[in-house]
Length: 438
Figure 1 (cartoon, rainbow, N blue to C red):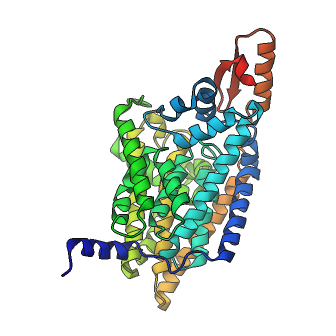
Figure 2: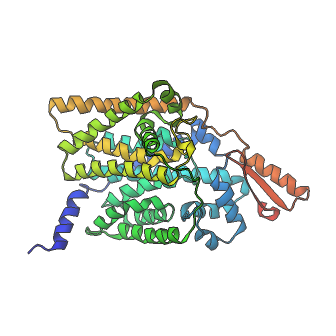
Figure 3: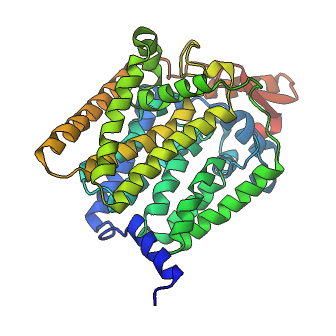
């Protein structure tokens, strides 16, 4: 007699399949090389190089400052902006015991390493869903080269949770993952950003399958984060009333269009071409997704539908919860304000597209339609990356961190009671007792 539990486990097995085999030894060497190459890209492109000597926003004024001023335990349980930021605070505690001149580099290198780790998790975790190795490689590579991700969110821990969110998604679907390190990853990610709440249904489905360490670790961290959010207060960015039409327009620009063109280039494209860019991006995105829903197996269809829904839900939630007039499409810069909101939705959109491409069967007409979309997608991504590398705006050009530390030391030597440390963006700074400069 089949019980309800058996039926639930059978359904879970169909939508979260087990990969054929874990990565073999040669694959681990390849993944290690990809990890190092990803870090090199993130740190050595012009904008990435600038991050090695420029501290960004909350990395300095909140996490580094409080690591220098207060006990570690107090910092780790202290919410900021209404939720826990465990990963940035842990890194800040490490940076606090090192020479202060190293702080910017410690944050940048750690952020690059964790983002590269997310790319590897996406590559390994997608094996059960996407048979094509080139498509899996492209999907993982987008975590690193996504045009929307190499400006405001580049090499800093303040905005890393947008990438960790995507990593948790694949970690929950990666059934034969190394248990302890992946469980630790999802726990820390859940304790770093509240958006992972929308992944709770996936974790609950995983509980019907063997190897429950990863979903249990995630749900444990999620409960702690949820309690913190419920008990904390958050200062609203503005009190502007959200206009549904403006939210819809901003969502379409920030996800399908930014996914292909990048945030910086959209500042030129949208004023010149108007809503045509939205229509073109939607068509390119919807064709492979529709093919996946039409021809895919149950796991493939579930992945296409789930990631498409996540893309929509996340961008709408981000805009509605943080809406202000500067997010309107008519504003100068179009989507540069709150650029970080595009990260996870764009990655989920590409996941839905690539899963659809992989699920397309062999008939000639299907290969022609979806194969053409595949080349068009790759063309847009390559061109957008090229455009990004031509942009100078993401390169930080403010006060270098070593110069800021030198000025602070000079002030302390002149008798100032506290050291004022300036950093990026403009007008951000924090003060610490002179004795904490080391």
